[in-house]
Length: 385
Image (cartoon, rainbow, N blue to C red; front, side, top):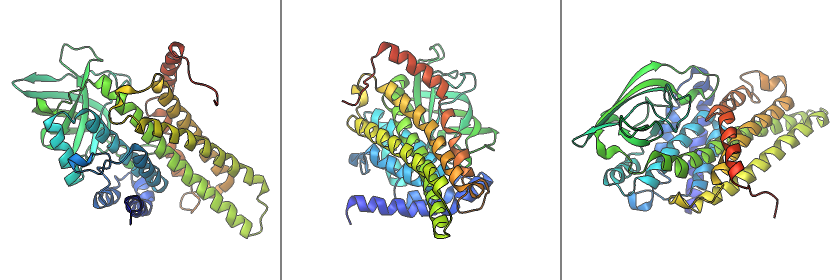
């Protein structure tokens, strides 16, 4: 069996576990522990890590395909995996010159750690490129306190990547990123996670306290980490998850129509909805595939991103986050009351609720305003040829 087939086989096995647990994870707002154990068992947590650190050095396109497959089974599982890989990408791209972060990458590969992030903060209005908290350093030691309104799967993560001002005197946007392992990080739960969708992500609010070595700080300024790695990888992997959720909705709509055909029902009135949903999916998949190829060409040394790449990534995120909701709506209209009811093989409530989070993850209105300003400065590449 070749390497690609081994990955496909592992992903299929994990997706089966995720699908078996998806409804209970959603209903009870449980973190998908069984899926995480399966991911670790099949050694899928370190795909982006280079061979020099014990990883397979997979491409972002391959990681996106795992996100897409997992999300078809369970949206929360797909999103957790995507968010973990975003953190891995940040360390791979910006920590390879640091002995401490090299050692952490090796440990990630050996022990199949789960990585999370703490970028949101009370008082910033949702702007991850600004921080209220500040890093205090003396004699090689560092500490910070951060009040975070959402820390996805924070209680389950083995390490957290935390954004903070560089010093107490630094400006809000003069940030660094600290990789905090659990032995030097304390979490005080402020509130739980009883949300409309993505219920398994366990995005609880915490007061986060870090006290450890100054070596935990990634050497690259966070503005560069965000622009070169965190934001583009987030948009690429998040959209892969959302497309996975929408894809499963279309599969359910098609299965429903085929059932109706076998029962000799007239499906002509509903079939056009299936066609429109598939058409939207194909457009979005083509757009995402090209964006992944473009980014794979420069990762992990993404300093050479082409002019206008940020605007392209912003548009990718806002467009797919909104159009995936339209796809599910088409599927709803095909399946009717069977989609509206919970507990049927055609239920789509979880899909719709999970996708309602998509325009909110880095608010689309804020992103569109930023993108519009970028396009005033840069002429976009338009036209087919």
